[in-house]
Image (tube, rainbow, N blue to C red; front, side, top):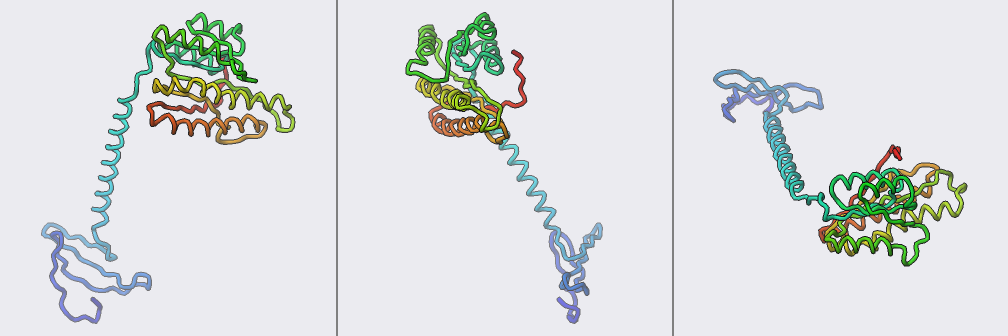
Amino acid sequence: MTQDDDRPSEQLTSFGLNFASCKTQARPARLRGTVQFELKDESKEVVQHGGYSPFPLEMMVWAAGGVATGMVLLAAHSWRRLRRRREVYGGSKVVVVTGCDSGIGYNVALNTLEWGCSVVATCLDPDGEAPRRLSEAGAVVVKLDLRHLQQDAFKELLSVLQSLKDDDKDLWCLVNNAAVMTYAQCEWQTNEMVTSQVEVNLLGLIQVTKVLLPTLRRNKGRVVIVSSPTGQVAVPNMTVYAATKWGVEGFSHALRRELTPQGGSVVLVRPCEYLPPI
């Protein structure tokens, strides 16, 4: 409808509103063709300028309702998954924790004992203070050196697990915690420093997981792998250590895809700013 149109405005009704008049206004070029509506009903007068319809408000209400419904459904699904999680407490479950000479491994072993699980704690030096405390608390301490692994490196560990199985206690979880780090620029690190980090942090982790994996797979168990923020963000003076942790992260993600369809699980942990109390 234009200004040159002499025809009377038609009476239109939409959503209970009477379109009493409709005329074209002179606007800048960018608003050319804009129409001004006067919308009236029996109780009040509503004037809408600029030719915008009241529909966007209704659309916003519908969108908000859709978002709220989606959030409710997501919360319900998450709650169902949480309810289905398996109980991990109980003395019939055996948890192997590597690297219990100090720090994270030592504290994980202590807490796992408090939860009622049987703990096999591997240590580099079984005569150290932390292994002694773990033994007094009820853990089975096993010597395990992940450097220069030989064919019978896991003989003692497997023997202990077999003894526990004879007592109706079977392996359910492996916590891969053992690691070493050399803080120095790459060219300052000796070949022994480089080899030690690669063997303990990556190769040893893979080997101990590989040895225990058949039992963990059969029991639909869990593999917990302690990584590091350097597994995602490389920092100077930790070149070799970061390289091993990037390898650990890749191993974890791939292993998760192998175990999940069979009922197992893989948990990746990235602790940071942690000062060991012992």
